[in-house]
Length: 208
Image (cartoon, rainbow, N blue to C red; front, side, top):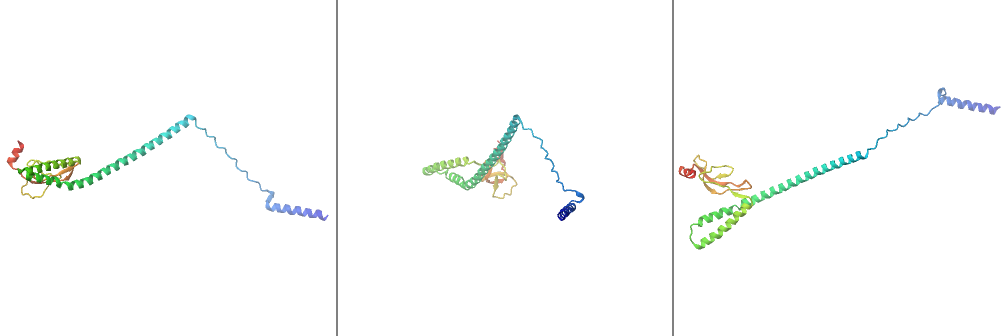
């Protein structure tokens, strides 16, 4: 009899504990997991579509390569042009320093032309040959003389310079004191000239 009462007590204790854990006899239920939604199946591209896409990608790569090659070629041309300009500028400085040679050649030839001594004449012949060779060298380097016709041409500040202050208001070049030269179209050394009013006699002769 006591064992039966003990069992009943245990059963009642267990029931009370369950009631406290789940009031109103509501037992804990598991939350149902949402069902996975199946993604719509994507259609695989057809062979024609794959081929068209591949051709488009190849064309894009070709265009990128062409643009890259064009940029490289432009940089190369720019670099070459810069090197040419640097070389020209360096040559200009050297050539400008060498211009005293034709100045001295011409002075020596003009001073000795009236001498009839055969030795002097032989010397002048060799001197003239050397002078001609140097002029050819200057021409190959792009150096050319600034042409001036005294008594006709007028003073140009971009091509000429004058060392004398002349009271005359004229701008006619009367005399070339030192020749000027250009290189590749730019002034290497301006010509030194004497300016003033041209005499009427010389002007008339020039016009005729």
